[in-house]
Image (cartoon, rainbow, N blue to C red; front, top):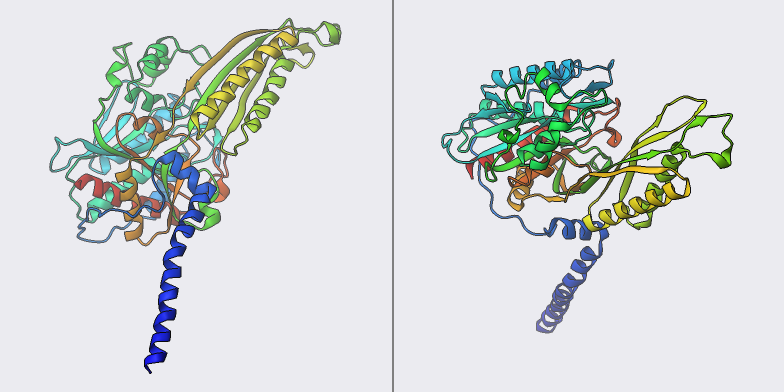
Length: 478
């Protein structure tokens, strides 16, 4: 017996030693995973780091989401549109957009929130906590929509936030820090070519505030005139009143559809965003001679349209040269003047979007695009009359404590989740300049967004709202 026991003990000891020696190899394999490495390098947070203890939230009754009313509200809001359904077009300060604002303010009021607006139309709905002097916890998103898009982008983060507040009220929760919902003005750049206009101003962008005094849309309507037509900026040209001080909020959390296919493909309920990629936008104008399409021979032409086409292809080339799938570039606008089939274009206008999780790599692409624009203009004997970098923003990292709160909330609700990088930018990118920030993603059908087929199921939306509500509750008590 003693010999048999010793032999068994020896084998067990060997197995234990083998297990211990295997741990570094397992960890090394994790570190070699390019996806994990990208997330760790970019966010600064180890994906396998154990979560810390989290604040417990006591609720009189479990969280329940009104899955009848919330989808109905999403459908109702989609009717405030300048495009026939199922497409949605809701452009800043238009009649439909202003009506949609009223709809949201009414829902905020029904939720028992105190409502205010600033000079550009950022809308705030507050639920006062029992320590109202503490910096509040904020959430929210946008409701403007690019032409012929869908009805979930941004909207889930606004209507979902209102429902999260309603759910917390129904559960008997009492916030310590006040909870505030923000409807951001003009997250989309459709009308004035400026993305995240409202959140940029909240973050104190003095250059933008000054530039807006002279900014006009495609119909030559000034920003200030458009704002006044919607009831804003009535008595002032100075928009600095919109600026918020750093620390106004203790945390900001945005709920949003993923706008990509990963969560749906992997069957994961919740995406927890660790960082938001760095976007940039560029405006380019070429000017040529124009002329009759039949009378001017090819060797004599100074065709601004062909210069624009060549630059559009150069954008693709330079993006692919980066060698990274995380580098992307898009020529979303290409306009020719005079726009007649029998007239050689005398003017061409392009608007280029490029982004990357690596800011330096993205900036290299921008430099190459600029060099190509100059070379093309010289070779085609046209004038590069404008090359303007409209925005060139750095990436934003989610706050570690907010990531933890979202993770713990997902686990407590028995919802699968994964850490993710957002390659689309959001108002959270700019809120990160004045507040710790985090984002919650939910799946959307095939990753579709910015098109009428955009869709998120009621179950997925409800899951996101639950995680948002519980995260807000935890952060409110912190």
